Amino acid sequence: MSKNKFLFSFYLSLILLSLLVFCLHLLALYLFGFPLLDHMIVLAYLLNMVLALIIFSVLYWFREKWRDQIGFLFLGGSMLKFLFFFLVFYPFYNADGNMESLEFTTFFIPYLVCLLLETFFTARMLNS
Picture 1 (cartoon, one colour):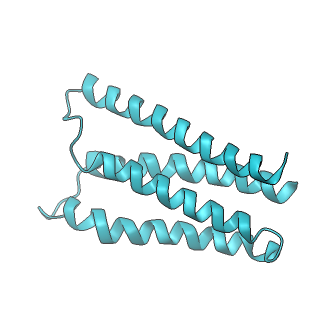
Picture 2 (cartoon, rainbow, N blue to C red):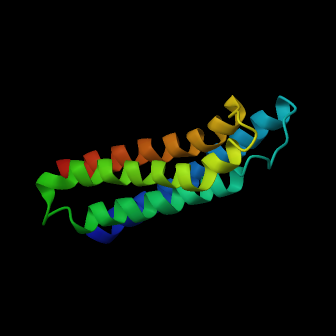
């Protein structure tokens, strides 16, 4: 697979999978009677997608130069996502002194989807 095709494949997969999971997430919220666009759900998906795009792009650009350090860069990217969680979402979620499971899953579901896709594509990149 050519260099640009691999990166484009990641971008397209990330966007389509995130969109699918977002729709399923909204459907589950609707079926259980929860508010659809509460708890900054749109921002959670967008921020996780943008960070995943940036992190994977950095990993891709340095895949040959820093091949032995890609794992550390990957972990650093995950830490960056959690930093954004604590800076952007945690103060809002914990404003009442209690973080509900619904608030946590609003951030964690898109985080997990992006992380799994980043892991899959990073492994493919390192194995090629």
